[in-house]
Length: 415
Ligand SMILES: *[C@@H]1O[C@H](CO)[C@@H](O)[C@H](O)[C@H]1NC(C)=O
Ligand SMILES: *[C@@H]1O[C@H](CO)[C@@H](O)[C@H](O)[C@H]1NC(C)=O
Ligand SMILES: *[C@@H]1O[C@H](CO)[C@@H](O)[C@H](O)[C@H]1NC(C)=O
View 1 (cartoon, helix red, strand yellow):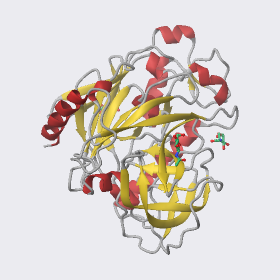
View 2 (tube, rainbow, N blue to C red):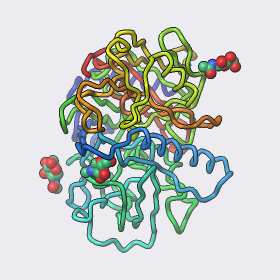
View 3 (cartoon, rainbow, N blue to C red):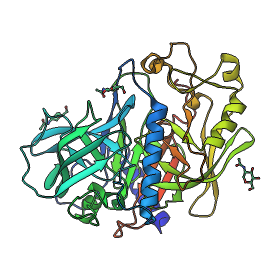
View 4 (cartoon, rainbow, N blue to C red):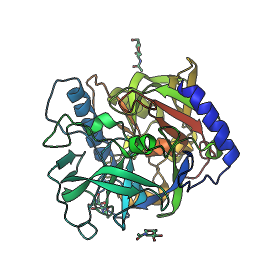
């Protein structure tokens, strides 16, 4: 079903070429594009991308456990502190501009992380609390009109207004693009309530034709360029170099079943992987990581926590492929070339390395236990692959699909 709907959408988008309508007033629902800003935190100390990824992994597994009814209290959502790079979009609420982290791994939208950029004190009695990998927000939940572009407004969007938050320096909050179920447990006075997401409301208000978010990130070595885009309501085929393949997602996240090979060697059997714009690295189960380390010959760098390889080991680096069965029953793979497995050298010094180090973007989730969530496909994967997150239209709490397609950056040698 999703495939059928998407193929007509794809045909429509192909007609629209690269400049999709960003304004449609009261016209029919149409996809629209919003630029994504890449914010680089060039603090030269204190980043620990591996720890940040592991903290995120732990929160995902806590949510998974909670969803199964084993634990009642863990607050959902995750994120995003301690990253070198965050992807943000600008939104306007009550005439104020907010730079919000694009997060497919959580579903609440909130503003006000920066005390100097808050709305007037809210009066709602709905207290909101979300804890993240290493940050948290406490706020109040109120209905607002949220402009995702100057021309596109989401009416009556329930958002959080921070009273206090920790771990969100340099941004104003989060726009959550995860499934709506992840909002359960975030309203303190109504812990079983869910909060319709921005995507849910865009669809239910007839603004977009399909509850689809397309994500295009590009690797770059420059600081802070606007070099990515979100496509609301459909896939922007102009950014893809191949067809989209869709994989069934498993709730409560955007998570798909994948195996992985390095060269000819299978290093990961089928594992649930969260597709997460809020994690920098590719986090693999510990035994898979050990196999990857052995095959690459890399050594763990004490300062950065990343695998470090020599120029000779770089020469023999193999392709890391993620493999899954798509919704049509076909086996598909999406690859990280040797170049795509390299941490951008321009940022080496910002994580405490030196300019000529060669670091890899694959890290261990830290978990040896069999866990429901085994891996995270983070930004370093998503910069090489167009991704789409499709909620079943009219069934926002249902399990959707995650789509991938190759881009010009899949094989690029930009690092
Ligand atoms: C940058 O990263 C450092 C280390 O993780 C963190 O302490 C700091 O708050 C971050 N700053 C911004 C503006 O994000
Ligand atoms: C928000 O920021 C954008 C980009 O910096 C700017 O063009 C726009 O005028 C700002 N809008 C408001 C309401 O401040
Ligand atoms: C995958 O599963 C098979 C069968 O259980 C097992 O023999 C193999 O060691 C597993 N491979 C990895 C990489 O875990």
